[in-house]
Image 1 (cartoon, one colour):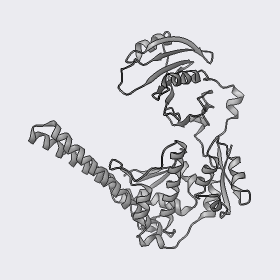
Image 2 (tube, helix red, strand yellow):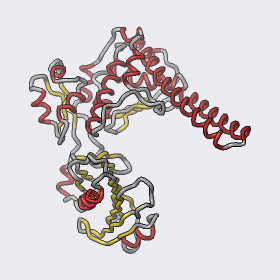
Image 3 (tube, rainbow, N blue to C red):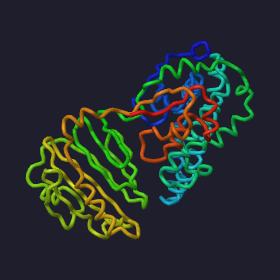
Image 4 (tube, rainbow, N blue to C red):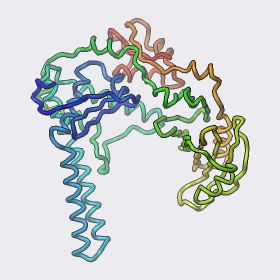
Length: 401
């Protein structure tokens, strides 16, 4: 992209993450995730993602935000001193931070416009920024649908990012989106064929409502209505009734009995602590005292001893059936077990595959290795809204185990 008029030194890196995202550092590093690579369809859309992030760098948005933040804090302190009231200072800070968030949203729109200039000067089609945002919009809708959320509306004043509809409306009047240029689709699709669309094996795999870790050789399964989200620190689970779980492991020798450790290390001290056995290993279960946190319902802690430390579940249920539900969640933690060596070795990440047009959308969706939203996932992966749109593609992206 140097021929597009950019100056300075930039480095472009791929993050090994399945979530679709991109970001940049003021030092010139631009990152795109593996998840974004699977979502987009050609080199032009990849250039649009990079061009947007380069816009943040070239426009010095990070430095401007920091300067604005300091101005807000200085004004709040000055107001508190002159008025002799901390409340006045807090009010000024609150109003200033709301304006700062709006300022950040304006920067996102500015980065979109700068990105169009970058990609068109580099010879790519100008509407790639539009089709990129449309793909991200579909992905957001799918995630909301999977979470059982109502479709999002315009972002609130507290959001630092404009919604996709706002971004698309702002781009509608930009002449650059009508500039023709290269797409590079065939080359791009060939490059991503076979790419993992899963977490790295070192992070473990989510399979429906189950979690399996081939390196640590552990697994557990939650109730079928739970949706699990895996990241580097642990696994977050959300139930259909908004019950929550958090699972993680920590290394290090835990001296003494686990029930004693729970009694001495967790604050406020849990109640109803008792020892048990889970997956053939020592375990302890305790409850957070009622009333220790306003707004929390039933909370349980489950600790399981490992050869090199402990694994733990934090469980929360606050719905009308919270007493029954929390018992169901505690019972689900008893599914925690060691994976046999052969089973752990057989675990592989899901991979993106390109297939020629031919099979029906229903047939292709049936092959997707997911428990739910098969067709919706297939359509979103291919950037179309319905099966008819899928039939217009020469090559179709699918996911295979």
